[in-house]
Length: 167
Image 1: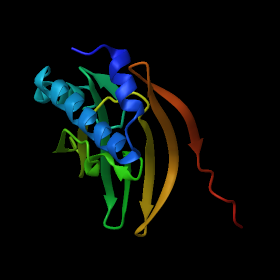
Image 2 (image 1 turned 180 degrees about the horizontal axis):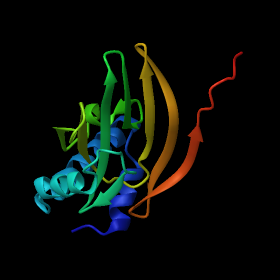
Image 3 (image 1 turned 180 degrees about the vertical axis):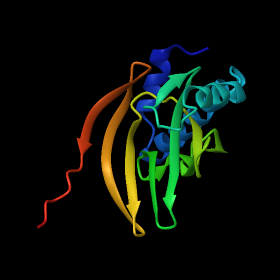
Image 4 (image 1 turned 30 degrees about the vertical axis):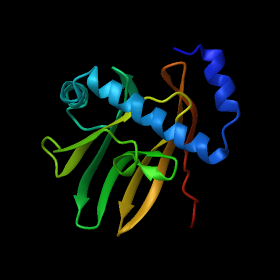
């Protein structure tokens, strides 16, 4: 087996394209090892237990997975409130590294709750976006930004959208 120094020396000679391919192989390997060493069904079940009302919790890491919780509650035909995680330019359920995604009905309310698992990759940046839709138009209420640092999800920013005051 090569030492880490030998591997780093080889990596430094790779082209950008080769580095990107190596990055993808590493992500796939991390995802597979995480799945092999944990029960995704148990992680998802415990996530649903922690938010029976469906109110979104901040993302967290469990057994090597980034656990992303979301919800959508219908308030009427053209209105609802919702909160989901966005990673880069993808919603978590569309992310190419998604491991598993499960949707359930919301207890006692019209709507849904979701739990999505991604590999908890160091440096991953994500935003939890909470919105309200009225008359068919989405309005962002809050955005909280997070990053995975040293194996933990750390909040890096939080912004509330203050509606303009019109007379």
